[in-house]
Picture: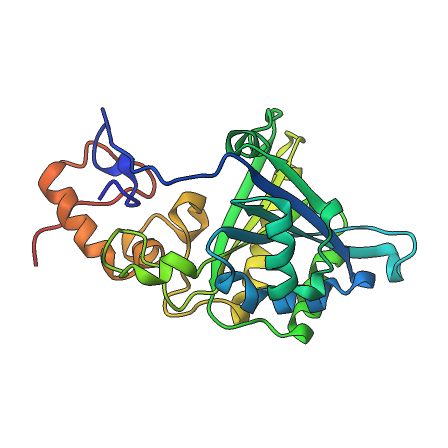
Length: 286
């Protein structure tokens, strides 16, 4: 249950074991930036089918955001960053990219070779004293180029909303693991996960409510393009907007695994001592 079921629901973890995987001495990190004038829409559309099926040593995600551009129509554009981590050298990555995603125009100049530990530190920057909001979705069917244009338009119209879309591919080994093997059920049949992420420095409630309201509007706008029945969500991007009723958020986070987690909870913490707004509740065995 604590392997993806939210350890805080079940108790205090005093120790654990992890299984290590081999990582080569040198890995390659790259960021390739594309705007609408540089065919970002076509590339993101293509990535949806390439990302989940790439070489097992390569993770290629997309981070998209609206930004000002004096040369663009309406002085706004979308920047899509194709962010990758490859377990190997730049020369090998060039070959993989050239075979799998030649449209991206990947070059040696895009490579940064380093140790794996150095690549992890790139993601661990000191945080300012800011507020943030995150929501999530899973995508099962590719979004069309026309639909992306509508999504971009929605983002560009909101000039003062500092939101980014972080799209991480699924597929690979995830598809080989059964939905019931661990609490995390969003495996085969999902192309990628979207994280809607926004942070801001202002502390007044008016600004905070404006950001939260717009984020919810975006979430509603994305409804036609994401998973349904249930509209799934990722536990680690915990979203209080999904409500405090476990019968609502439980299937979104865990699908059919939710009842099993609740049964475990009833055995190890029947009085619900370890709880929060969206913790697993105890139930009786069916």
